Image (cartoon, rainbow, N blue to C red; front, top):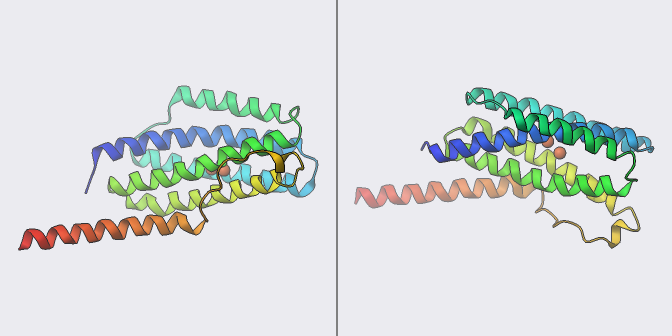
Length: 193
Ligand SMILES: [Fe+2]
Ligand SMILES: [Fe+2]
């Protein structure tokens, strides 16, 4: 069933995600350049590349919805991303790892929510890609959490809530689909009686 409200919400959340990926990618560019450990540099560089890839995918979804990125939001994302990237060089090691982990935990939920809006407005073709991006954000959150916990001060900080297990991203989505299908067939049986 097509749902105009969900369609609008999907466009809005994708516009937010599109610009958010830009800010994140620029921030990670500064972040990986600011760390000295070779493995950390490589992993954060890979995360930067994954954010650019997400942005490309979300851009394609927006085009297929005949929607455009928000131009003000795009400029803001550029400024914030570049600014955070520069700050990484002066904030030390822990603060950028902490900030990134906290941000990534929100990105997981953002793509899960987008997948639900896509399902509700009949864009099932977006669902798998959106859930895959939520899973990649889960990996990002997990990486930055593991970094924070390596640090003696980080271990004493109160961290953002631990996300549910990665498998729960698809499992909870599938359970909702099954539930709504059961409810739908129940209505059908009731109306046939
Ligand atoms: Fe991303
Ligand atoms: Fe991410």
